[in-house]
Length: 203
Image (cartoon, rainbow, N blue to C red; front, side, top):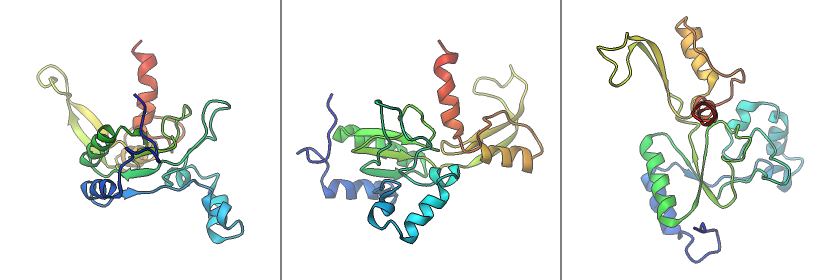
């Protein structure tokens, strides 16, 4: 199925985007490529800010169009989405998915921006940006669903979709004095790390 792109007759109207903005509590933004400021004003303060922070993965992750890589040769290049939902709740994510389905839009999801396959970056797309969903909850005695009576409760941690490993290390190790196994690159999203290993782990 061909996805609708800007300029197509079926591309959502301004009223459609306004309705989505209302559904996501105002958290709909129009991302700009990371170097837009440098293209417009190469000697300006905004351009200097970008250039001074390019080696900071946390800064890049905090930009809706930021990615940790410059793409793959002859495969993909980073591109800002047409719009992004800066998701703060599961309801925001659901609203974005529903909107993309209804209007046949390209849909991408980004947490920390570490996707080396380019799955968090696509031109003319709607981006679900989960960076703001970074809540961490510690559990003193956790058993999975169906586990009570069969498994011993253990300490555990729950992380929202946008949490990075630095968030878990701080909450679990620094604050709670316990250990959590994760990635060595602390700006990697926990959900992204788990997802990247699932396909190989399960066949």
